[in-house]
Image (cartoon, helix red, strand yellow):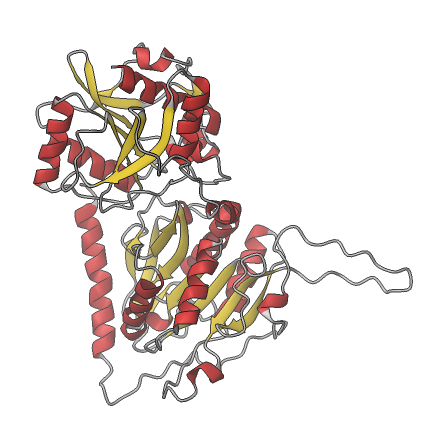
Length: 509
């Protein structure tokens, strides 16, 4: 699907090989000792309960009495280092340990880079309020196998992340024991979402510093250079936001791996790791408002009403994060209903082309942000659907290179005898309802392509028919009209106008 995939697989294999070597270095009878354990921070953080923190931005303005001495306000708590309480482990036989020197270096460096004055607090899964407005970021690390989370913690962590919080997790010293157990627990928290690697063009790698590669080594071994998109970070997405950011390699910023290599440890170069840490904080801050708004889902008001011959969309379900912009289609259908003579039934039906009847839908809509694959039978059915007059409208949810490569591979299998080509600038689709021959782009896309550009639509054209219409620049992120920092797509209003034109043209033809 992606020409870079073989290189990425090679790098992922390298990471796995290093981890296996590390795991093999400790026998079952010999517990590995972490030299970073129990080293206190140079400056003790404020020990306030995370639930007593304050919103990260803006700082609250507290009026002072004339008799009070003027005191500098306490910096807002941004990050909470979270662990298991002694009470929660009592009777389990688990001896859990974590490091406490890492977070100070990370927060101090990030403050110096961003020109901010954030602070961190220490908390545990038992006393944390699970309110993202009090602690937008939770930081978690360890090197031993994780004890199993109880059902209450599972529920609270899921809700915290759905409400806009971010969980930053890394494997201390890159220990395989921790990695395996974290994957087990995160699958319990999100059985319906995938923890998967992110590509090198993910905004986490460019939100502040431009990171194209990371240096990593095991113990005293020579440094190895790994590309940023080679699986060094994995995420779980809520919408288009990375809500869980996981590094299977040690991302600790409080330990100098150059002068103090850790036998049996797998670590990033400290300078590279600090830059990555600053990028993660920048990304989390930029996506915070989007995360807070996202959970207020749009409702398909007529989804339970019997179809009356009006426009009902079938949305293609696939294995590549098939619904990252769920609020987009309701907004688009509402706009079509209000701005055209087409009466739209507010209904979207998820369909698996390999299992469900797709021929009753005049339009199939598809979006995503991660790699996907279609089985040969699915490709055959989609071709038959198009040959019988159906139209497939495809949108790259955030301008993702991974989804783009996967879609181009899929369309070659569906239409081996036709090529996906740019839609001509004079095509009637650009003036069918509104004139969208020139459109504004979202800020992230504008950095790449300019503020105002012609739409960049591609299509499969067979004589006068257009059975497939594809937008590599995101439309659906703009349809959602949520505060989003890293959308490589069209500006909100122009994305709606372009969407109205495309859907109305498809229905009319």
